[in-house]
Length: 457
Image 1 (spheres, rainbow, N blue to C red):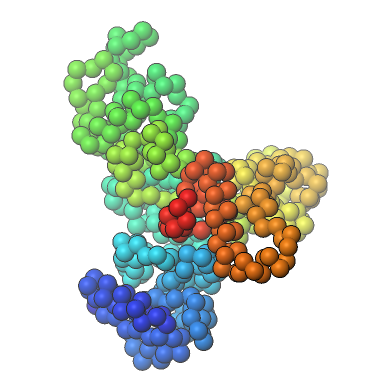
Image 2 (tube, one colour):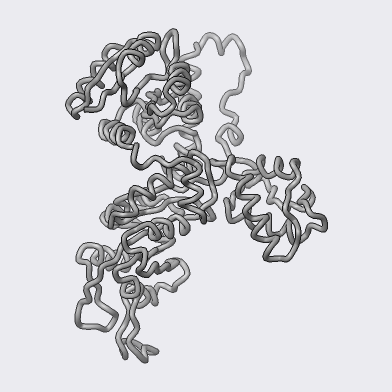
């Protein structure tokens, strides 16, 4: 039985979590503050700590620092209010395993706690990651989590949906999953859905028989037949037409296909890994993507972070691309100046890793010395891409024209009014997409949904 320590200054929260976790089969200890939590940690064998961030006396972040100093391998899950996403980000940087936000989603709590208490066999260290995933460059916390997830899901036949902006390396993640699967000796067949005309997509996926249409001069196996007993990678899955979505759903349900013009179904055994740079939940709301297909594909969702979210990996990626293109272009450009690296670290990379690779390739090609200098870095510095967009940069929400009137209204009213205006503006700016608005506002989707309901927006 795993033992969990719950630390929160609110008695009701401690009681709620204790009842929930005991029902799930855990032994639970509670503490009202950081000092008592320290005593529990010294007196008992604890497998997981769940602590509120905001507490009087010793804060949750201070308790986290203590735990990481005394027991660095002990996982800590932070509890954060919807209004304090920055605290959660800081906690993750300081070594927290994960965080959960108020208001709670019980299923999410159970999932986070289960993963935290069953992570011993799957957690990767940096040196392990470099050996196990040599084609994916990165040692940041964000990438180590992805490596950990790949190791956990690769041996299973579960379908995977990979999210991520263009250029983040979604196909590399798909290849890594296949390479560590039980069918790694079988084919890995990639197809980019947006690159094939709609009228040819059915034939490409399911094949066709001779004479089924003009130009069909012979039987042709489709993607799924070629990937039989292996992996089919469907990139840009959000571009499929409604008709193909319906046919793909049937393939996933029945595990068989019917070639174009054919009369017999053909049994297949294929693992599907799909990828998209779209937010499919938004596409479902717009009627562009089937919800039942989404759930069939997203048995295991993985989000690949944008490069601006893992900037600590930039020096590693730069060195990798320097070696690659110095060899390919037969040049001795093996270094980058510290100032040039600083320029890259401060750049937003709208094109992600693919853009960085292009920048380094161009820099190596243009450089006449053996070190890349800032003047040979060709960056896209237009206003749209020079830095991350934020709501505050695009809307003057709070203008103080009468100081006394400001104080008469009171802090709570001012904050509420500002919050409503920012949320409304973010929703307008993103076409009423709650997911994109939450990203723009730097808050969780659950927090935004709660506030939209609270303010009747």
